[in-house]
Length: 406
Length: 141
Image 1 (cartoon, rainbow over the protein chains, first blue to last red):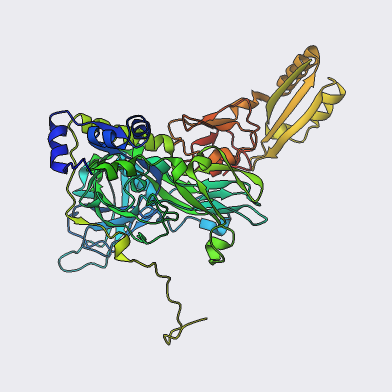
Image 2: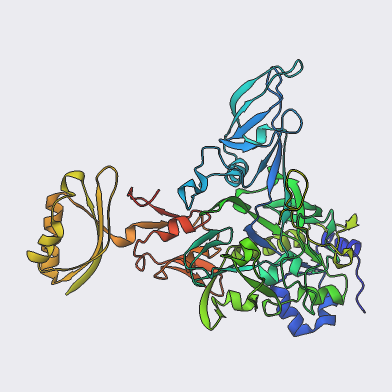
């Protein structure tokens, strides 16, 4: 390879305002026009973006001590339960948590109008959050009950910590059954009435660095409108998924765990969502810069929707009951066209992640870099990739005597 | 000839009156009922398309107003809160009339209130809950 650029060199250019940056959408034309070698020689960074529902998200809070002090045991934020099984006034609020009073699917399909994701959105928006908590009381933490309110600026820490974000590819969900179903992939009408997907495709972070050659532990990113970092590989990380010749996965594959200070984020990019019949969650805006270290990274970033394939899966039987696999594979170009053809039938498509949002994030990150406000990081350690040989496990199902249940 | 989609709001004391009968019989209008419901407060809502001669149509509306009914255009029933919309597109495959449409290559959602038939499926299918109705009725929660 003729181009061999270091992250340090890129950062020098960013600091002097000379870095050449394109979004992962813009770069496609640049590479088509200039060719791989020239584009790699001229471009320093490609920015990516995604803005989709990401259930494995949440926030660690330290709300500070009341007087007298208290060890929170059972805690609710705007009636949504927060996990208090850590230090005294530390809490973790998950995006899918629901108030105990929510009827959930007892009133099928449930509305899930307000959950953890909505509390996070309200918190970031600076709204007052009601904290109701009880405790058993100790000699050092005597207070047993509190009902108060606080705003984000008034508490010590609020750290967004998302154990699984930015899925590298995802299923396209259809319903082969005879009635409407309500899933985390949205409302799916009977007999393949619609096909829902959830990826920004060519703009999606992990589609532009498919083997995680530049994204690693400590990579600085756009997270929720502020700055965040890659803190680990995400849960259910499966880099071993089948891959195409361009190294992009043909199934859901790699994931990222992300962390960042909630206090510098924006409600615009952290949105509480209600999935009918499924639950509450959080829509998270993520943008990752890809350093163009060489021609290989340039080729990865030039990937187009036509070259990215997603599996179509039946969410009536195949997904929930693990009966059978994918029906067919379709490209993101087909998905984004508005319809796909399945079993000779024209099926309208819709996305759950916002491509317009992904575009805006990639463009915003590009602006930050061009303005010298955002520099790139050298990862402190790589994330496990294909060579790690990770295999996804299913939960063992055993009786109380530890015998396998068939 | 005139053809209009309207919504009538019935106060509780008028809910049981045979209003449609008179629209047909006395004003010679063609009535196509799109939807009707009565809420727990016994207020009624009737969405329909009326067609007939301009004079009869205007006389009929006057009569309805005199009765004490509230008349609104159908397009005023469902509100798209653009600032809540994240432009994902999930609603566009649920909307039966393409009132909610996905624009390419912008990849944004738009709402054409004149195509809306107030089926209200979008209210709950939108994960960001960007669609709203101002009407308190039996079918929305």
